[in-house]
Length: 572
Image 1 (spheres, helix red, strand yellow):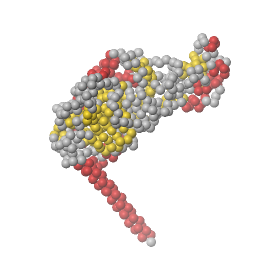
Image 2: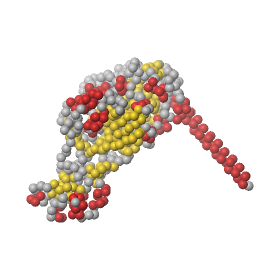
Image 3: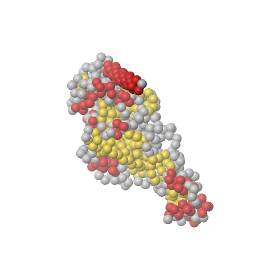
Image 4: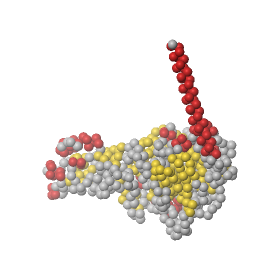
């Protein structure tokens, strides 16, 4: 009987294993069938599991999908062979330093392309899409096979539903708890002033934030504004070849505003140099000495040490011990696009649009990092008495905040990036805007118990970072320690000013302890990465809407104590 049971268990195990193998085989077969169908339509997903079993090859004989940077040419769906945009001899309209920035050792991966001469491939549907694991940038190349008259091309990157990939396109970066946008509009990289689609390679790129559950169908389309007289780039005209004017929203039919300027590479360096030369970036608070030479030699490290990233909506840069003469940066700042002259007509751009599956199974995880929720700024609930000659006259005592005690945040990385991450650290700064305040979406309703007011406490701002009187904008560092409030309540309770007071239990004559919405957190992430043996330090700064709260430890410690006992504890 014992042997019979063992035999039955053995037969059951063999049957179960057979079923599992059959299901796995069916799954692989199904994936291969899907990949085969996609390939017949001209779609290739190099990161998909099914593709890795195929190992498709380009006509040149090189494995394009895994060794693209060493390929010089590719065959289009039409059968025509063309030079790739990073080839030194190529019909590319893209600035050279941007065109060649696709190396694996810099973090790039090829996630999708349509460059296969299959029966189902469509002429002029020539796309390559790269993603940078280190920075989160998505770069799209498009090859136009013939010339059509047009100017001022605006690309549309559209997803069916709002999601978190696009959370860092506009002035502010939104954490994963918000999913606001499903369409990005952006101009095109071009060495030509008309910014139209030309024969040859065309290119645009967008910064994506990490979103663990984002999986959607993606559409790429474009239109041309066809203006008679063009001043699209305004103050960025000198850097326009390396500048993309961008805007993201939930409305695919919204009018292009070009309110965000994304400037890359040496063009970003030139724009920053111009701002420093004109005195808009202030020397009295930032260590700007040597910035001009830093920009000339390409020292991103010096720029960050001086704090230049604090004045920008977003900043991504890289510095390396071995590479010192490359300005590998991208900045995001407020744009001022405007069209002077007559808008002739808006028309579809002369491209063949793309609709493709952007699910995790096909393209992997996109974006480099993001915060899970709004960062929290913790302030000390203790204030110090500021003696005044009016103390004995009016008994209205002034108290000065002690400022920031700490921060709270949850940082999430793309798992694919983590395997290349050697170490990282973060820095946070609060800045205060006066003029041209970044627009906060209406979905933000919680600014903390101390944030979100339309007015702020008495005080002054020190450490001016940036000022442009023409645009009525100024940006200050703010540690909340300059802020002062006045109270008559202290005299009523104790007949004298306590040297240290517990703010939440003190009535203020200003009526509120809340601070205005003009405060934003500049969150800076430093990452040391290793891609293909190349070790780099990448610095990435993004601007978030914070919550402002009392420090929970000090608040809970003192909330039930008498004021004089608190004074003793804090001044002994």
